[in-house]
Amino acid sequence: MKRRLLILLAVFLLLLGLIILMQKREPKEKILRVMPVDSTKVAPIHVFNAADTVHIQLVDKEWRMIYPDEAKVNEDVLNYFFRSAFNATYSGMPMSESKTDLDRYGLTASEALQIKLLDAAGKTLVHCHFGNTNNPYDYFRYDKDNKIYQVKQVIYNRFQPKLESWRSPSILKLDWNQLSSITVEHSKNSYVLTQKDDAWYYLDARENFTVPPHNETMGKLLNILANLEAYTFKKPSEIDAQKLILEADVKVGMKDKSIHHLVFYKYDEEYLLVADGDESHYHVMVFDQVFRFTRHAEVFKYKQYEG
Image (cartoon, rainbow, N blue to C red; front, side, top):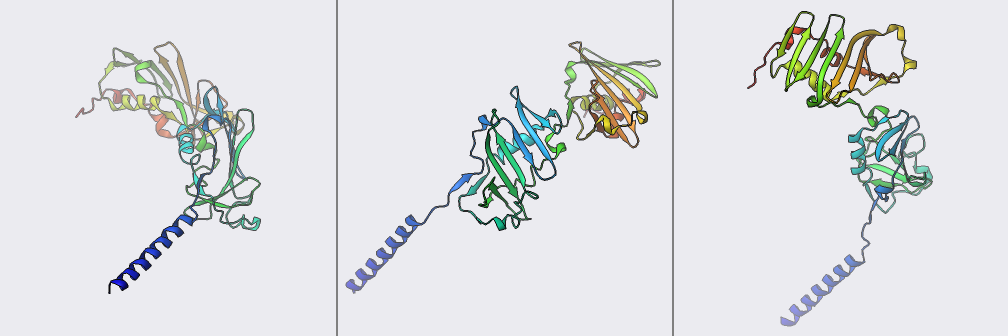
């Protein structure tokens, strides 16, 4: 009986040893970075497909869009790009090495999203093509290479080269503590709001009063100046100047004596804004953004519940 147990134990130990040996010999999956690049070396970023192109560049230590428009870059999108796409990973084992499979995985020039990172001298650091065929994950290949890999992050749908996505929507961000006055002229009235000792005073041709604390109309006006945004704009070539109807002329005085000038226009069914005299961009606004400046005196008198 003891001999039989010893034989079984020996067989068990032999099988266990074989399993351990096989596990050690089993090739481990390599997890690699799609963009194995030092982030401090990246200067221009080119994002493009067959229809659109966006170029982002580091200018004086600040990321800016330089094509198709010169503007501040959307920091939320750029930060997410460096957190997600820049650190994306993949298995080193290709899913296909056949050029004929590029169409199947959406990696042809007519379908792929391409991302190219360059250094300050214009040398390409990495150039990737991304595709998605309605699968949970993206596929990618390196430029001039037919090896197709599956990337473990979603890049194709999140980083398309749309101007309105990469361009910063911010027009003004003014801290209300730094404001000294707001002068508004519109078709129904003209008035001045002046700040002194943390209180706001209203003045027009008929009214002169202190705006109550927590006044909702005053609060909304300050909020829009603290974060004035527009996601789309029109170029002068897209505008018929004769159709522009002045809606409101706003001058925002700052405590440092500088002035921000906002001119709102009605244009057909849209509202447009020219900020600080820059007529290269007619920002497309929504009605509420304009309406906050064209309120009448009575609504500045209400004292809202502070509860």
